[in-house]
Length: 499
Ligand code: CLF
Ligand code: SF4
Image 1: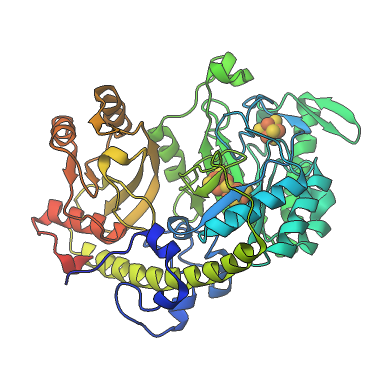
Image 2: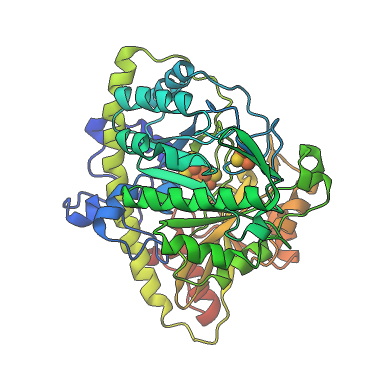
């Protein structure tokens, strides 16, 4: 069957009257249509429907949602109450962002105006987060004033907060009162002897603490805050920065400690360390982990660790789908009519996504079932996918600045992360040096699935042992990866009905 594929950006722009029906005809709005249907093998498969409902539009808490929904960060929190060895105050908070200067710290009023302007133009927007550039709870008045303004103007947008946790126990009631249902705490260690190698000092109760005492206070406050949030029915994600030689062998203990206290998700992020950023770790030669080292730590934690693997380490002023950064775009102030109309567009967009994710999940389930026929001895493969969102193989190889990496074996298709590389196609011409970097970034990958690829890069990748395939263009990702694997392992040819 030939399917008409509607790109995500076109879906987002369609008027409400044309939205019903989608690309595959009308389906009854069953319970499955209104519940977040996780991708095959996602860490949220086992959740009760009530929790899935709470995360289904959050691009960080739901792996599936990140294909469809956008987040926006507001840089309203400049100061910090601790020092992390991976942070330089001139740069974004490394807890939630890749190093890079925040273009501008905003006042609460300016931040609210910016959200209204973005929401008027981006129906995919579902979450507004405050994640820096310092600690949002040290800047509590600015943070909560911003959230209160957004809650009043855009009640359908979810609020999200990311903190180092030191001040967290003092703010549980305000978090709850403002309906901030998603909070991230960065916890890099639960052993003071390890934590002291990451945090040289903290400021707590009006004085500066160093060494073991600082580490003990910070860990105790982080774990207390986590327990209080869970008791208040807030979904808590814990971020941990993986620092080779310091906490790599300790993250299993961190995972156990946070799970015991009810954390919802654990996000292990690679340390970004570059002398140019001027951080202590960067200047003293502490390296970050390789992709294989990160995956090895994640694999060690096992399948019940509930790990987030699609984090993009966003800037504290990021805007857009994860992996996109439209924060530097100039969003002109929105008129009152545009703000009101945008609420309807978001509603319509969510209905379309409900339909799309139901179709996608159905296709993924069928594809996963067919994998059981693959021989048990077949080794797992890593497959890179070029995607612009929507959960489909829908991007040209030359336009991809990152690849989503999936692992496939007879048990299913699982997202294991993403790898960044420069964009190969620079205004029509291919860049050989960029291609070298792309091939290096794809180390260990068996195949790239994309919407289109030129003969030249396809031959270079083939010479490097990486197959490139266009035949899955515009299909859903998991079924496409499953079909590739079946074709590889049992000489079955992929068919349109497999997607
Ligand atoms: Fe922002 Fe963080 Fe909320 Fe998401 S990001 S405050 S939970 S809305 Fe997401 Fe970005 Fe990773 Fe953070 S991809 S860095 S986990
Ligand atoms: Fe930097 Fe964030 Fe650590 Fe504060 S909590 S030192 S802003 S990384």
